[in-house]
Length: 174
Figure 1: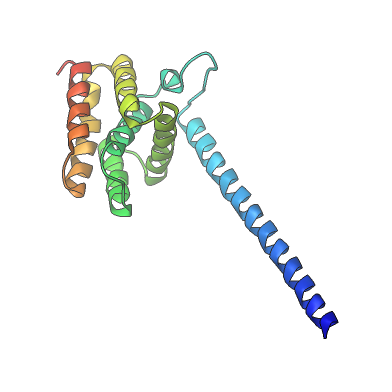
Figure 2 (figure 1 turned 180 degrees about the vertical axis):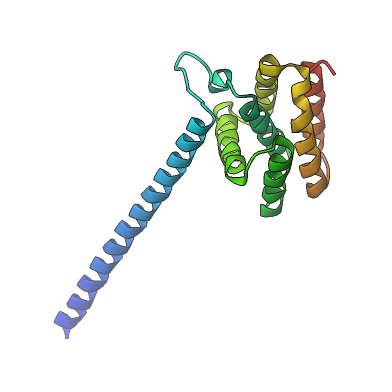
């Protein structure tokens, strides 16, 4: 009887370690997919990171800067639900005249840039300044339309977003 209990324990232990190994492999695969998505999005937008510059200062595509600005601005608000994310994707497609895949990549790059700026508040200011430098004061029109569409779907702007909007209007001299 004790041999049978030992054998069952051994089989259970082996099954446990096989399960853990498979879960680790799945997690590694998901991380590789995410990294591949970020790299693919960066290539699509022609983003090349220079090691002596901040990633935001390396942006040469106004669409990337504007899309990342909307991500940073909306991250200042309440936690995003799947509905808000869908509204954000649709607004990006409509106002930037891009396909769904490109809009999704824009969101991925936007979240990465916000993370590189250490949060949405500094990212909003830094991305706003970069967008202004790239294309001028009229560049704020499309991001504001996206923000208005998404804010309407999520219940309006909160105080931190209103403050950021004031800062953006100052940056863009409006």
